[in-house]
Image 1 (tube, rainbow, N blue to C red):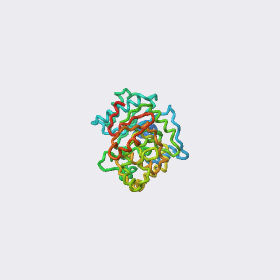
Image 2 (cartoon, rainbow, N blue to C red):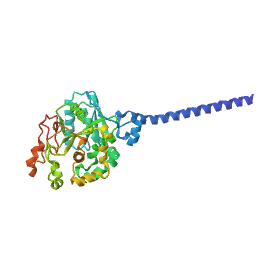
Image 3 (tube, rainbow, N blue to C red):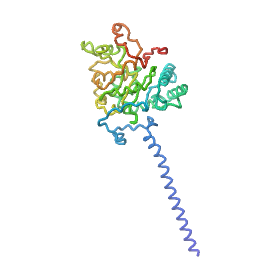
Image 4 (cartoon, one colour):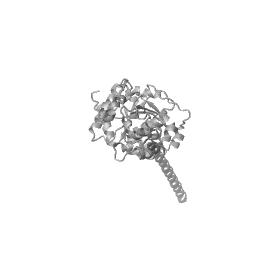
Length: 372
């Protein structure tokens, strides 16, 4: 009897150990799945996009999302579509003027739009403290609970873009100049950084005042011809007449730096329409980032660059104008008159004129637009 009792104890002991091992294994699997699940959710739910979740390897991204560039056409804008608007709002905490401009710009957008606020996502590129300021602005305007806000850390975004931007930074960035910060070139590669569920994006300077519904600006995407990937307005001052002085002296018959309608004025990047889908698939655009391409253009045109991405888009206007859709001047009515001086006085008004209805005033070069 003692022998049988001992065997029974052994069987019970083995059973208990087996049960504990099975439970432990199940618990480990559950914990593993808990660690994996948030990553999968972040990747799949791209409406909650954060810069840290970018899958930067484009071939992997295309394979995972079954993305194809064959016969890509821009999908017509519909008034029910979600609007993606982006601002670069960086180092704003001690900068009162920047904060006031941002407040005024955002207020004007939402005052004029008939679009349901829930259909508008505002993307903010900048440091964490600036994003807190931006959130306070939306709270003060009673928009915080109505509009989607997305923060993109400037450091993380620039780090992701550093290799892509190297040709531009080496050729178009003046050391210690205001526009030498890589953030002022980030617009050129946003199609490589943002998730593919964002197909169209408008990037705005903060020194703007909207007088019309921003949906009207989005509707201009429908006017893009087949190869056009970026919407941008012409420059309203003879800036590039000055920038290309050396080239113009060597080529006295050039249209570069001449006023409209026949001249090539250069462009202003205060209002940018980016068709991200078409940019991702445009060999003509993406070839501009080959290491020797931009340096060659800088030498050829003897450009003295100092305006960040605007200089890059102006080079595109010279070399690949078919990539640009020129916005009506009323959607970026620049008010700066800094270049109304010296020998440029005689031609200034030819550049500055805009006879179209004004939808967006642009107070560039610190022009006061509080009364427009």
